[in-house]
Length: 330
Ligand SMILES: [Zn+2]
Image (cartoon, rainbow, N blue to C red):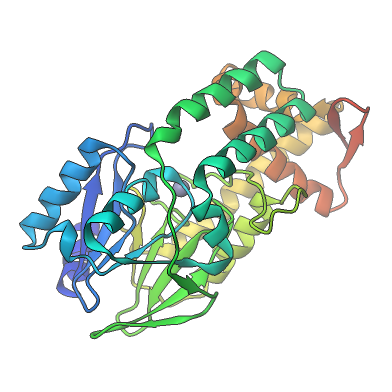
């Protein structure tokens, strides 16, 4: 099956992909209209006039308007996916479904983003990223915040919960890793998985380090969690995986195997760097990515720490804290 055929098949099942523009490097975000009862939109796109216009016109092309929407499903906490939720709900009165354990996070968007940024700055400083780089990234993040919005969850979902529609049942499954709240929606009868950013065909989903949903201050092992989640998805007999960005995936097992192998190679590369001499996360990122480790400091640091976590878990590497900066040592 080609990606085009997969989209056609999804459309025959009443699932229509809307590509909504974002101001981010990732490009357009895929939102999905579920023509069923209730009439459902899965993710909304970011909070911008342009995204709203596109959403309206793509709904219009299917004979609907925003006012007709009855349910909005939020797949995860990232602003390119949920920025329009508040506006859509104001217009339509739609219910909002999302993972219950993410509800508080989604409701306190503004305040919470501030705390997320503080967490990121502290993490960057602890891992050797210079103060000016960390603070510059913090202000970039603040400047993006307007593309997000709060979302008040009216239907809390639990991991594994079945959501009945007129024509189908979707099972909500928690698949944390890319973000702590990643949720995928499984149509077992049609073998269609709506996976958002849990799996993306053309780019590997970044296991971004984020604050735990329960508010604890412990740093989560985002990559280790993500690998566990991918292994669970690998076992599913999905024929079509509809993604949050780019084309549908028609062989998720091959894609996941490829990603797992890639993470394994990167882990060994990082191990070699650490075995040469003790290094901070920032030093490792610079050795691998050069200047990108500065411009994309948080992203690359998340990658490095994720792989270093795996090495720590395997007992091959340990963290040495000199009181200011954490270094990894073989
Ligand atoms: Zn995302």
